[in-house]
Image (tube, rainbow, N blue to C red):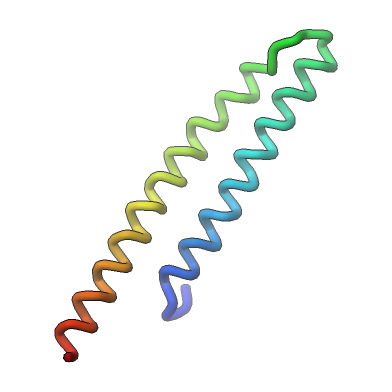
Length: 76
């Protein structure tokens, strides 16, 4: 990570969001390929894991922003 930890975390979060979207699209497409009106649940369950990582990154972003504020306040 660079010194701008928040920007790095946001970039990782963005990549995970893109992966979540890809999985959702794949689940829909596989369901259609199987002539089903429902998405493929076996693929869609991967969204849960990715969402947990996104949530963890959201917590890390908030923590880094808070740490940045503490350092700025201490330096003032």
